[in-house]
View (cartoon, rainbow, N blue to C red):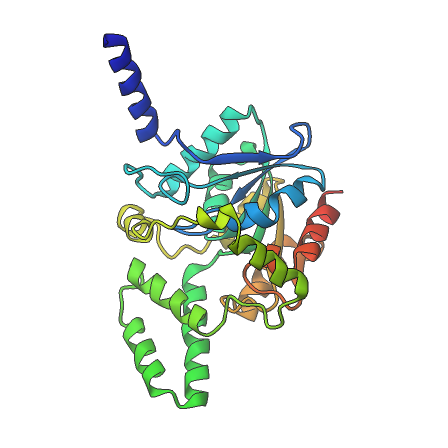
Length: 306
């Protein structure tokens, strides 16, 4: 009985320490290791895993997908939702799979996690791929509000203008402000490709009928807890990206031309950091570029690495 009790306590300890991460690997362990870092807070890797992980592995990568602690399929009631906690998750993955260096493929909010991690643990990262990734938060929020304001004025939509005015009065470091900005973007189609292709429609449709979609778990408390516990808010990671590049770590950037959450000035600035040969802008493509234009997305990454 005493032994059983000790095992039980040890298991609970592992659970509380975030060791119950959902992790799945694709491909050959001898290939270049690549970790996909999903968006959020409150996101998961189900869409990428269902549509793209195996296809990227087929291109010659050892692909690792996971859900951050407390998010998606990595249930943890004790998760703190901080960048440091996210770093611990990544370090535990490297240790688990005996990896010295990895490529980080970061999407949306995952771009901030990946950049901050690379800045702190540069020896662990061989290259960083920013895929529709956030890098200047306040500039993104300002762009969303300014561009939606223009749309509302053109339509003489007083209700929308009043809504925007109320959002602008919110605390810019709050989860409420962030959510309101992205909700506005979603309502105005900023995350949707303009002209869905047959291939993209099939990918989205297959995902929505898959077991991955059934496990598309969203922790609604994650954003609130993140902004409550994390001191770093509204980050502009471009200075860090420049320092990372100066250390010899390759930075690649791939974005959808129709991703409405980024301004042209932002896209130009990230292109300047990554460099002409490490940058790609995909036509008829929005935020979920690995589904919107999957073949181009995969071909571009393969081109960079092969």
